[in-house]
Length: 251
Image (cartoon, rainbow, N blue to C red):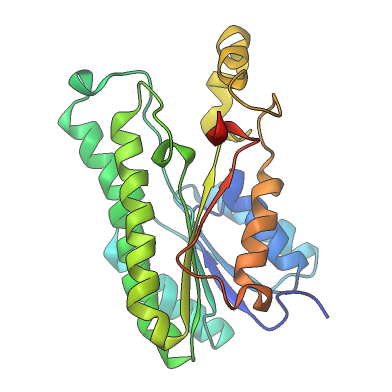
């Protein structure tokens, strides 16, 4: 028996990077998945790959900034698969290279809307059906920027710190309904968001010098933790924070 047999998950930002790796891991472990993302071509590519591998997959293009998209994604998932067991709030954007006094309102507002309010929208859309189904697992993908001070990204860090706090509040609010909520805090992972940094050899060497394992993470290394948190192996785990960061946060 596979670890996620019979489970149904929604994964936001499932068209690339960590979200794509999570989708592939969930399907490999037996889950049916609904993938969302803004870039329809990439989303459809991932969905086709997973279907060809025997997965049960639904792709719903759209943005987490759209309340209608959040509600429709849940509705489509229930119509296709009949239940909802797991929500992975993975979609997010970054903004680096400027100090706080150099950050404009538009950047701040966009980061809040995607990285924090997007999680609020999708969680609110999904929670009632999770309760009706007897419980579930909500997994929020945050960042070590919420745990350590990283310069030139204060606005981004603020959204991730708030996401960690939201995770703990959700765990407390919905424990009686058998809904668990945990947060995963990756360090620097080799994804499209990190491409420009990793291609700058001097800058990458400086950043990775803070990591005990001296390399960026791979998306699948993050996905392994999410499989665990979505599975019945983690039924006594809620409100927890998991830094997956090659040792960066202990420096």
